[in-house]
Image (cartoon, rainbow, N blue to C red):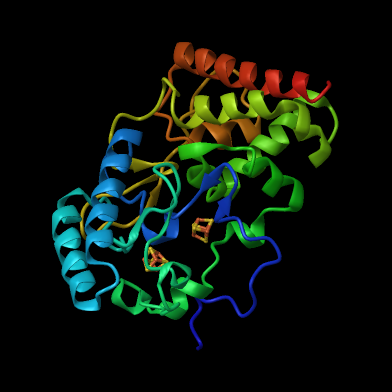
Length: 274
Ligand code: SF4
Ligand code: SF4
């Protein structure tokens, strides 16, 4: 199959699932106005219940698909990015994955053509992070746990910037072995940046460094949230601040935001044995 979404060869290291985190971003799980943990959980629970009730009858599954697509349509953020209703809770309530995966089928049948992409795309697509993250950056991304994992692992620019910002604090390039002693601090940093950041843009159409609007949405890069600040901001700090969807900052908020970010980075660096 000649489809640019399908890798000619699987990457050596697949980032989609790991022991402490899972991702289904390319199946559209984050493409909603409300991306709170509670809304994501409710949506995934609903899908899982409907799909399991239909499983593995193909016409019942098609009916469940159509019902879920209709229910979720008003909540979708960016119409040009497909949302597959077959991404749900697999194994337990915390792990997201493909409910149609052939390993789940009693005879191993691949029913993914029922979904929003051809099954070859489902089986063979690996997002850009698989190419762009160097080994230590992939290790850093995989320090994320739980519901922030998918958000971290799919944002190569954010991961690279955090890696460089920690280098800057350490005054040396850290190596993967340094991550072992900093698991708790890294977990706290990802939580701060992606779940607790007090300077996040309140507009739900903001997604990381982009802004989406309606069915005809085009993604538009925004001016940096740090634009015009009188305090000095390093290049990696600016990339981090923009990637996590920060609203435009004035000098007071800019200083507070940098203080929070630098505090989190410093705790990681200390735990790495600065
Ligand atoms: S977005 Fe990337 S890491 Fe996430 S499920 Fe898709 S290919 Fe895997
Ligand atoms: S059917 Fe394809 S698009 Fe849908 S959840 Fe499974 S892998 Fe993702």
